[in-house]
Every structure is written in structure tokens, then in C-alpha cells.
Length: 69
Image (cartoon, rainbow, N blue to C red; front, top):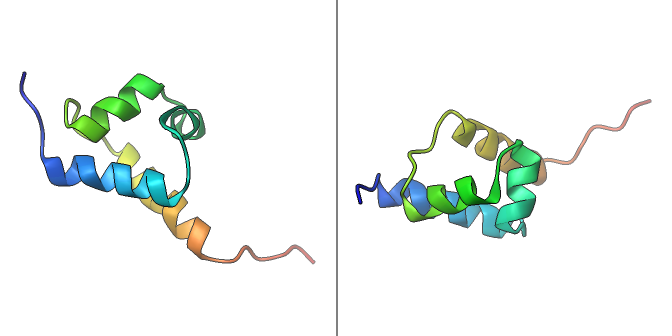
């Protein structure tokens, strides 16, 4: 089996852990499947532009939301 970079795989897992999401919950949030998230985390699948979504979600979790007035 051919795998992609382990740094990317570890990054997905770290982000998911910090968000306290299961693979299934993260998959639902991104509109994908749990199997896809698992494959990203094991390096079976390369991470597509969806990785940018992961970064955005992580950033949004850090920043307080602006309240509507």
C-alpha cells in the first residue's frame, strides 16, 4: 500500500483531537465520510483542499465570534 506524508496525517489527527471531534463528527462537519477521515489520518489518502477547511475550522474555534447587533 502506498501512503502519503505522515506529517499531513498527524496534522489531521491533531486538529481533530483539539476540536474534540470523533472521526464521524468531523466527517459530518466537512460533508465527508468517517472512512475518508480515517484514511487521511493513516496517510492512505492525500489530503485535498479540504485541509484548508480543517485549518479554518480550527481558527474559528480559537477566535471569539462577533455578536450580531
